[in-house]
Image (tube, rainbow, N blue to C red; front, top):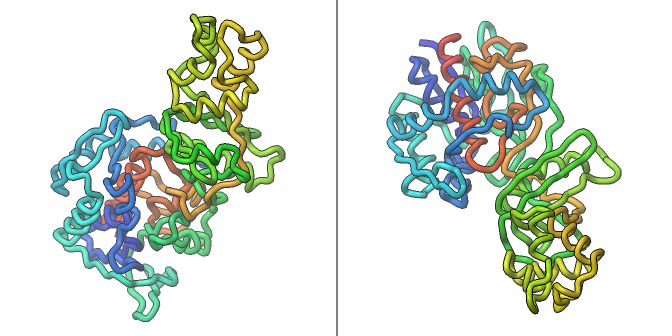
Length: 408
């Protein structure tokens, strides 16, 4: 029987092991922590946003070929992934319509992590925790996987699935990227993605805790991103799904020393110029603060009037044309000052990684090293908040597991 070694018992690695073993390979799953799947456990606020309810392939971000990325994603369609979790893992999924995500019906992320590991064991995977992989090197006709404090493991095929650099407290510290680079792969510059943004000094510190749905737009030289969703003021800046989804444009503008930094603007409500112009027309004794309070939290309304230099108690019938124009501009295209980001410590994923040009999109096998497979966060691709990055992990993990078992 051929032997496949999978490095990393996270989302992609556990999935790879399940399918490698299911295809008949002797499969060993190595994990540096004592439990594995820690990013699964903290996802979705502990509920695990396991998959998007609907998929928009254009929302993935990569510096590699978008066409290659689409081929990979389409290798395991969303409907088939849903069926796998419900049929094979035994986890009923429920859709949360307001967020367009699937969650386990129990709303417990631990059920997802434990269910995947249980299925791996059922299919015969040998899971070894507390195994720190220090090197992967060609050995004869196969591979040798070196581990700290343990004999090297010989394998016919190796799957690198040990994540990127995000949330290092979960055990992600870039080992897979280092191994891939040592073996000659092209690594697109890595950066924290889906991370909160910092504004220091914080211009809206007194709004900490205020949240609402908004539309954000981030623009820099050659890059842009827009997102509609939840927004949260923090004591140091901004967070929430919309912020995380555009953060990569801001992060990269700092890393590449763009001057000026990327511009971040916000539409505070669903209303555009025409709608707000209408709402700010004279209406009895209504004031400016009254018009804004009808559409947003009180504290935010007061802060935006101050930004626009319009008195809160100004009666709408007394608003000057330039005051109305300033206020509409702040409401529809308000500038959000920012200075930095929360980095990998709070980033949900790693941007950049191994070039997709060096991966067979059908099997995840390296085009540089026969018998070596790569999947999950180590690859140059990530998606928005909402289950996209799990979908990427599940799809690439399955392809790698099947590819490694068949090739070996």
